[in-house]
Length: 286
Picture 1 (cartoon, rainbow, N blue to C red):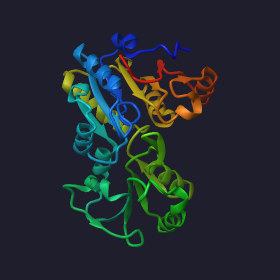
Picture 2: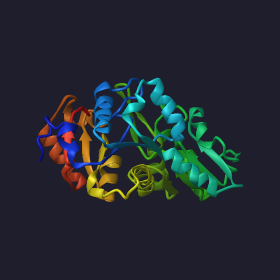
Picture 3: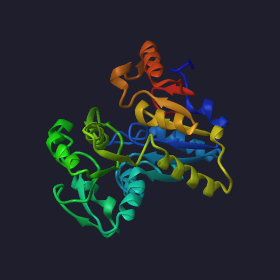
């Protein structure tokens, strides 16, 4: 395994033309930007590389850019962004005229902006768009078991706008839409996962990179970066991309000390995932 505690982006950068970087857990924690990570991405770009942020945020990319601005993530850190919200909006457009139940907090309503939709309660809707829990600061997926069971009994299709199960908010983990979607699927419900680790969001990100560079992107010249084995690492592997694992995100507690993950714990995690990343770092830094 790579020398996982000394790996820096600068040692890997010459191998790659494009970075597909996760956002939450790598670039910020929902409360503040990580200056070292922003600097690393900006330095990669200044050397001629391209950075596309790829995130399971259940909102359009324009709304996420506004959030990045508020958190003081500099525009110099990235060229473009693709969100699972963007992919979900394509699903919504394809179901024009159908009634939709929005399972998620009001702050995620921008996912419907500019699209003509009819909202309905889950008992009357034709399908469901899940962006998260209504109150992720105090609820768990079990609070939704009865509702999801009723939706499954009606054979409602669910578009999951954020396949993440949990995300780090400050120093706390909160449940995301992926946790509800997984429970719904376990009950027999039909789910489409719009974001990582599934292919559509990677295809969109690589298409944007290719258009910007004016030529096709070779998979071996792309490095994906993220803090989730389930979404980021799995998605990169299935797409044939190298991966840089950031350990201080959602897996930090499983790996021991936040700044010094345990080698045995890492080995066990990678064995379960069925592969080893190109590099491992406590935090993204140049």
